[in-house]
Amino acid sequence: QKEVEQNSGPLSVPEGAIASLNCTYSDRGSQSFFWYRQYSGKSPELIMSIYSNGDKEDGRFTAQLNKASQYVSLLIRDSQPSDSATYLCAVYSGNTPLVFGKGTRLSVIA
Amino acid sequence: ETGVTQSPTHLIKTRGQQVTLRCSSQSGHNTVSWYQQALGQGPQFIFQYYREEENGRGNFPPRFSGLQFPNYSSELNVNALELDDSALYLCASSPWTSGATDTQYFGPGTRLTVL
Image (tube, rainbow over all chains, first blue to last red; front, side, top):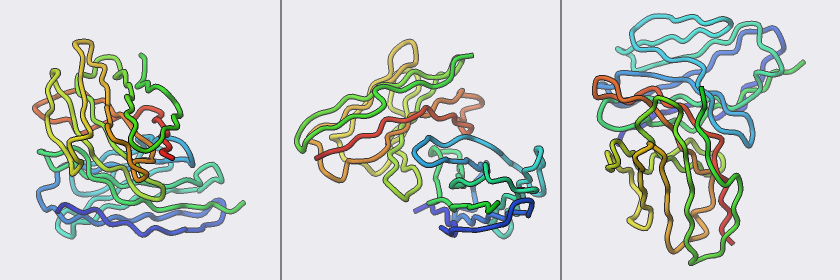
């Protein structure tokens, strides 16, 4: 059973701070890793993908991958109230579609 | 470029009824996956369609079935509805590249309530 684990939160950070979201996965053969943002009542929106070890930056978002530790994280710099949402970690292992974690609820306090 | 669309937006059914949900894939995408998302949970994979054939299935009973049409649109059918089928049903499309369908883009979803 392939599993993706996330802390459900809520994670509360003040406006302007760095939010750090973490995810671990069980399948060592996993190849692709994704972060989706989901506002309440809406569908998931892809915000980051990462495929190789290290960091990948896109604007205020940085994804970090460590395959040896089976760990992927998302950093959000200069957090804004509009970043308040549930963040879903998803993992692709090549022979099944995405396996999602339960999501971490982020609350950015103005 | 047209994104993924789904219909209807909301649906209320009673136990034992049947329901059909529809999805149009994003332009240029030939693979459609369906997910069920219960409240407070991550999306759970139901099945995927590629070239009008089922290409993988999650842990869902046979009363969950689907179709893909030549224009890559898709339907999800659920028979004999149960209360636990109440959820957000998500359709995701992706291009099939190098035998993989990793990057998936979601439609707005259909909220199904079973009474």
